[in-house]
Image (cartoon, rainbow, N blue to C red; front, side, top):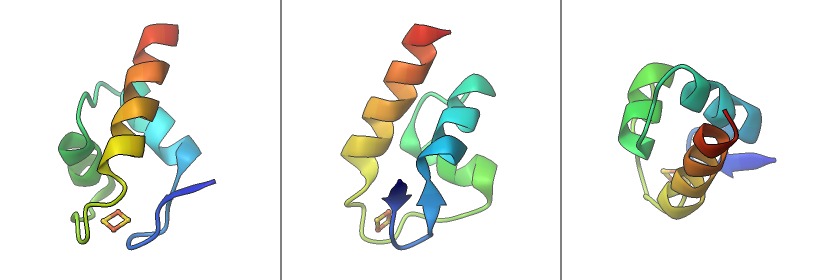
Length: 56
Ligand code: FES
């Protein structure tokens, strides 16, 4: 599933960021070398980061 349409970031990339220590969408963007644009993905991205961290 594509989480961030603006940057074509997929769910598995966001989960990998969480496993690498990213706690916020901003940190995940930075880790992926991308920048937030419209910001629509922030809520979903945060939920995925939280979920992946909780499962670790
Ligand atoms: S959907 Fe992620 S910045 Fe627009």
